[in-house]
Length: 267
Image 1: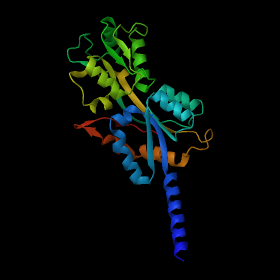
Image 2 (image 1 turned 90 degrees about the vertical axis):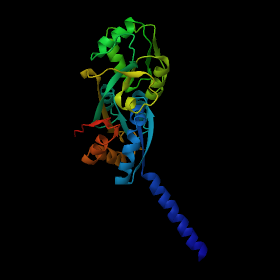
Image 3 (image 1 turned 135 degrees about the vertical axis):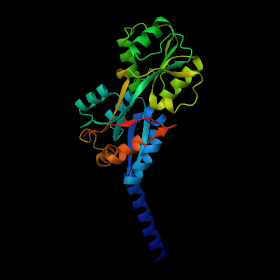
Image 4 (image 1 turned 180 degrees about the vertical axis):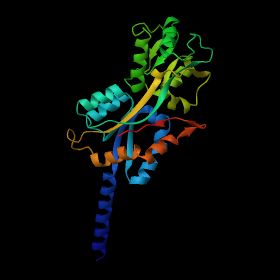
């Protein structure tokens, strides 16, 4: 009798473990959502509301899209709208949902040796290139890197970024660390910048240009292409993060009283 009860209890435990495992989704996302501290703030609220845990793979947007394209994630949360729209057009996801935004900033040494300070990102990068000033690029096909390349093109310096230009092939946090130690200029998303503690004498030099707008999108990976995708649970995340509760959670994340991301979901 005792062994029967133990067997039944073990079976129930295994069933419970299986159910718990089924309520976990994998999200491919950017380093900025993780390194800014947003996800540690946001995801526990989603889990509390739904019982679904989220495992985050935080890489550059290009890599995150590649992960989703292979079907190795259930949901994609990134910030390169042209690449996201292409992913949807190719059938990687059924729909892209705008979810939030912030902006990019050009940071660099307070002394600003290239004279980049101002509100025009293209003019600033042209000065950085002309001065051969040190510039650390992520160089990782991330959303930030894609934006940076657009700005170099707008500066007329796509092929002549100056002798100080270096690619680190790294995330936003490491790029800022290298920039701080090298006295270099860096294009950063504001969220990661505000959460960055090792600033040295780095300050924001360029902000306020409308071209620095940084839009994030979220989408469920297409289960028609990848039957392993937990589409129902992933859709629950999309529905929650674009709902008033999720949008409020995004808006409430602040550092030093400053809001890092601004909700703008539209269905």
